[in-house]
Image 1 (cartoon, rainbow, N blue to C red):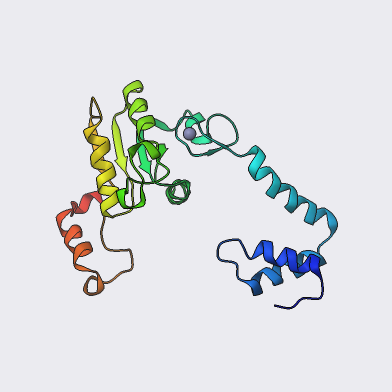
Image 2: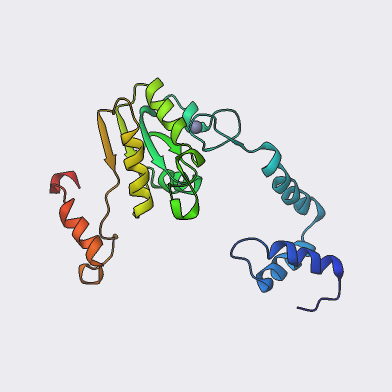
Length: 202
Ligand SMILES: [Zn+2]
């Protein structure tokens, strides 16, 4: 892409480094910003800058926070005796968006994957175990992506817990809402049959 300005070229290059932003989209965003008033551009620049200086990681659950503890950990109306174990902060955001969960979280920051060189000490497993030892946990929910690495991770955690919480659950794996049975893969359909629930529980 040949541009008549080095400043423009540099801005396009920086924007196109963002995930999902190609050169053409980057150029559209940059041209849009050029047309915007200075204060608006300053606000955007400032909010980007503070991402690195002001955003913190919760010292308890490793979710995004504005202070030492995140809003979920600080919220007294949530059920702190339930911990939902997830891989990333994006998973917390996804579950929070459903407005169906009122417990706490623990963000592992990955899953055990020997092929990628990720062992139990590379993610926040020890922190989770210490948390379960220190707090009266009633239920541990594994909300991990359905794959071998996640299964290995949840197995490892359970094996290393000195005392198991009363309830250990995993999110249901099954047919997507609006999906069709005949197009579901065998593994998904098989799991759906195995983990069927009583109609009154739906
Ligand atoms: Zn937290």
